[in-house]
Length: 311
Image 1 (cartoon, rainbow, N blue to C red):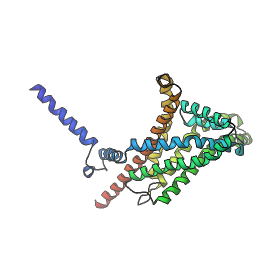
Image 2: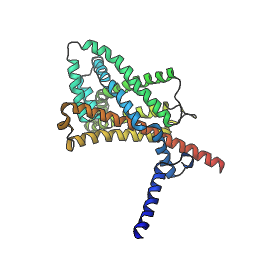
Image 3: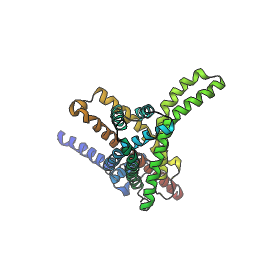
Image 4: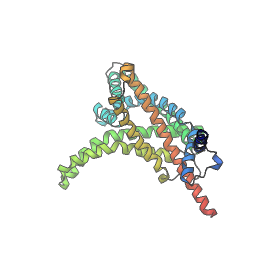
C-alpha cells in the first residue's frame, strides 16, 4: 500500500510538469508569471529555435570570411592596419575563432591572386549576409505571429541591415583610433591627461558590447512587421538579453576549450572550424530567443491593456 501511495504524487507531479511545459494556448493567462513563461515556451515550439539557429549559422559562416576580407581591403582607405581588425575580432569572438580567422586572412591577403578574391568578397558578403538577415527576419516575424512584408521589401531590408552591419564594424575599427587621438587632446586641454589612459581602457572594453547592443536593438525594433508598430523601449529586454548572452557565450567558449575541452586532440586542425560553427549556431539561437522574449513581453503588455479596459 505504501508503494502505491508514493506513485500517486509522482504521477501528479509529472502531469503538472507536462501541463506546464506543454500548455494549451487557449488556457494560458499571459498576465500571470506562469502564463508569461508558458507563452514564451509556446513561441519557442512554434518558431523552431534550433532549426532556424542552424540556418542562420550556415549563412553567417558563408558571409564570415568574405566580410572580413572586404573590411581588410578597406583598411588602406581608412589609414588602419590589419592589427586593428584582429584586435576588434579578439574582443567579439572566442579565442579559437580569432586564431582561425587570423591565419586564414593572412594566407589570403598575402597570396599573389588576392585581387580577384577581394573583388568577389563584396558580392559574397552581400549575398550570404543578406540571406542570413532574411532568415532572421522570418524568425522574428514568426515570433510575433506575423508575416514579413512582400519579398522585394524583405530583400531590401536584408541588404540595408547588411550594409549597416558593415558600417557598425567600420565604426568599431576606427573609433578607438580616432577616440584615442582626439580624446587625449581634449583631456590634455582640460588638464586631466593622466587619467585619460585609465578611462580609455574601460571605454575600449565597453565599446564592442555596446555596438552589439545598438545593432540588436535596431534589428528587434525595425524588422518585426507588427500592428501596432513596436516602440524602441519595448524591445529592450531582448536586446539586453542577447547582448549579455553573446558576451557570456564568447567567454564561456574560450574558458571551456582552454580548461576542459579535448576537441583539438580529437579533431586536430579542423577543430577550429567546429568551434566556429558551434559559436555561430548558438549565436543564431540567441538572436532568435531575444526576439521571442520581446514578442512575449509585447503580448503581455497588450493583454494587460485589454484587461484594464474590461475591468
